[in-house]
Structure formats: structure tokens, C-alpha cells
Image (cartoon, rainbow, N blue to C red; front, side, top):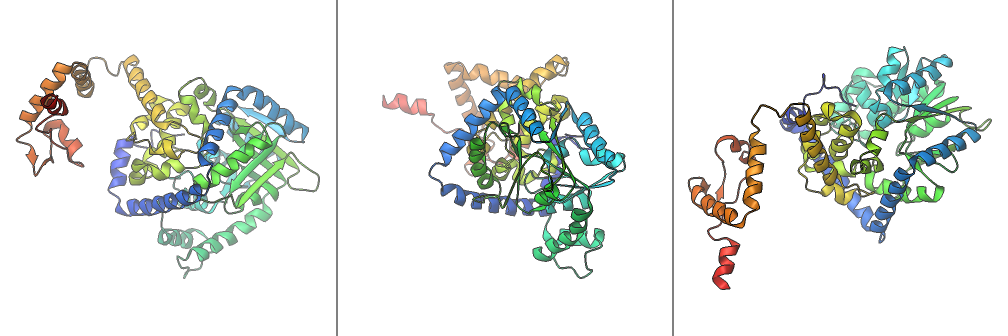
Length: 476
């Protein structure tokens, strides 16, 4: 999911992103727009909170009985004429997909937007076997043509503006006219002409999976452009790659998520394109269907009783759009397929604490992500849980041995002071006296020594002349 050799740590990458004013403008404008639209469509439903609770409860039940539902899905897909493949990790999944494509003699395939295939770096693995996988989602195509990486779960090219996209198309697409404007309609039409040939000529299509219904073997992809439907209906062979958690027990359960997902992601009342298929049918759509069930660390997440709620994620990106950290740094700073708050918890659990680095600390713990999550993933709770695991991991690895950790020492001292009323009140009196050289115009604008970094971007209110306890004693 990440490549430590290519991606700097989050603090380093965030520092670079914060210096890019164009990036911050693009992100700020896009996230504010999405937040405003989402608020409108959510407010239309009187039972929105009940829907969220239903979504959470269903996911919790799915996780508890995941093994049974997966076996049921395998049986249902097989009955409908499809083929199930089980993949333990990225390498096994990429090999399975590559073998299926090679068996049909194809060297070019069309691919619908899929975070799961991004996670396992499927495109790169296929290219090593001489197979070109063309992205057909407009934003994902932009990322592919610019040799970039996605920066948002829903809008992968959110960090690019129209002028940048126009220049990219003129440079990389034969269908782009030299006088192409940056009008969104002209840009979309250029991409459409490029993709039309690929849709009509490709023998094999690849998709992800938003939901799979265990009782019927039905697989679903929801999207906004229609490219996913072209990938899943026109080719002779369809390969769908699915994380094992993307399952729902019944059709009735699917109803809940088809209400929660569009409002939380694209701020729409329903998805423009909801494609559902069950196995194969002669003369109708692909005549060969393969469903690859991918683990890739998910059973390890399942074993974590606190962290397993991250598997509830339906990839709506609502948490990214409200996160003050993501809004200022963008997705590239996370160095992960899954950026933003959900990435800060999912990546460390799927990839391991060593590879994820400081991602559990890439949050202010403000809780905005928890408030908007359609399935009530308590991201702040999991972040704190992972931070504890990071400290324990470093201690076991010897990373904390033999060196003084000023922050840890300060926290231990504060814990002792806060636990004793007399020490706490003495510290208040000491702080009141010690702060006088630092207070300017009723606030502390700069702290001394190693604390200067904290006050470089924020002011600190001074310790008041009278504490609440002193005030209470005078009046009691």
C-alpha cells in the first residue's frame, strides 16, 4: 500500500504540501464545495441518524460472521456460473488476474476505478507481464497519464485544476486538439474519444467491487460516469477484485448502503450508475466472470477488536472532506492508497506499523471524521489505539531504549501533576509568575526553546490571574 523508499514520512511530505499554495487552493475549494452539498442532501432525510446506525450494526454483524458469509458468496457465485478465486496477498491476487488475462491472449485491458487494485499495485504487476491496463474513470485516467498517484478516495485528481488537465491531455492524448480549451465538457469529450476505442476492442475488463450480496452472488459497482458499466458489460471476460469485507448478507441490506453512500460521497441522492450482475448469462454481457476475494492483511485487522471497525468503511471519502489535516496537506502526504483519516488507521493495520510510519499521528483528533462517517467508524478511538501500539512497538524493537524522550518525560510529569490537586494548583501559581516575560497584548505568541515550533502557527492564551478554584473559594 505504501513504498517507504519512494515516500517521505508524513511530517516531511506535509511540510512540502503546505508550501504549495496552488495545491492548498485546489483542495480547499473542492472540499468546501463537497461539504456544503453533502450537508444539503443529508438534511433532507429525517432518519439519517437511524440509517447510520443501521449501516454500523450491519457491518458489525458482517465482521462477526465474515467466514460464513464468504462461503455463502462463493457457493452463490459458482451456482450462477462465475468462478471464485481466493488470494491471500497482493502477489497472489496479481498473479491470478494476470494468468486469466494471459489465458485469453490479451495484452490490453480496460479497468474501472478500484481502490483495491490500487492497493495491490495491479497495473504495475500487469505491465511487468506486458499487459497494459487502461484506467477508464476520468480522474483516474488523469492520474495514469501524468504518472501520478491518487490524492483522494473519491476524486483521485482533486489536486489538479482544469488548466493542468488541459496541458496534460494536449501532451499525452492523440485525440486532444492543439487548441483544446479547459472547459470541462471539452476535456470530458476528449477523454471519451480516447476511451471509446478501448471499450469496443478490449476482450477483458477489470473492476473493483462496492458490495457483494452473499445470498444471491450478486456483485455491485456504483459510479458517476458510466465507465464502470462499460467495463463490466462490453468485454467477453470480466474480472472483479474484491476485499473480503465488501459483503452484505442480503438484498435488503444493500438498500441501506445505497442510501448512505451517494449522500456521503458525491452528495447525490442516488448513484447515477448502479450496476449489478449475477454470474453469467448466454448472450448477455461477459461470458466469463471471475471474482477474486482478496485478504491482504484484512484477517489481521479482524483480529484487532478495536481496529476492526476500519473494515466497515464503504469508501465514501466523507472523512477526508471534513478533515482539517487532509484539507491542508492533500492525499499525497499520506503516501498510501487510502489517504485522510481512514488511511491513517487502515494503512497501519494492513501494511504494518513499520511501513505506515507516523500516520496514526496525522490527525488533530478533532472528531469531525467520526461525526460524518455514514457507518460510524470511531476513527479518533482507533487513532489513539494505534498510537499506543506504535509506542509499544518501538519499545519492543528497542527504539525507545537508551535515549531520552523529552515528550514522554513531559507527559509523565504532567500526569503526576494533574493527579495531585496540590501539585496542580502549585503549577498554576508557578505558571502565572513564569509567563510574564512572554505575554504580549493578552496572549503568548512565541514559546521558548523546543516549544517554539508549537507556537509558530498558533497563539497560547495566558494563565489567568485567578483560577476557578480560587474564585470559588472566595465566594463559598
